[in-house]
Image 1: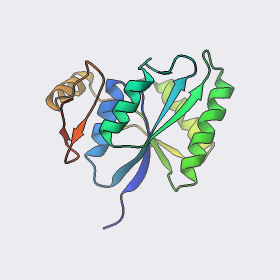
Image 2: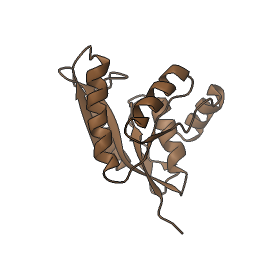
Image 3: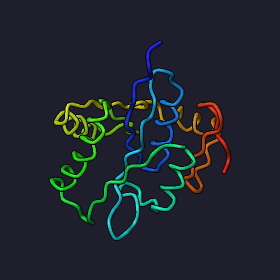
Length: 165
């Protein structure tokens, strides 16, 4: 049997991100190499959802995954954001990682933007929960006993079990 493919996961700290990661962790043919997150300088929060950096670090620790933080200034212009993300992506590309996963579900323009930026560094996007029914996703979220109150997701033992905080 071949080695699982290493995947870089763009982590937002939100529920969609947690479900997409959970979906990938159920698969034996992939392995999550690291979480990649943008953090807004000065605010110490995840740029996408405003999750505190301290909580982000707790999430990564509880998931037992390395965390790569990309720092961007407040009101970051796209060219700077793209340059900093490209630097991080190239770091992983040099380690043999060719695919990056996202928790996006519906925003076609965002998906195209991500795919275009990844293509510049010869990487491909992976969207594990793309176009999934949201009612089905929330049922899956509850069935897996995710705890979203503190946005601290913990997986226990096997890749399919959740450990309560």
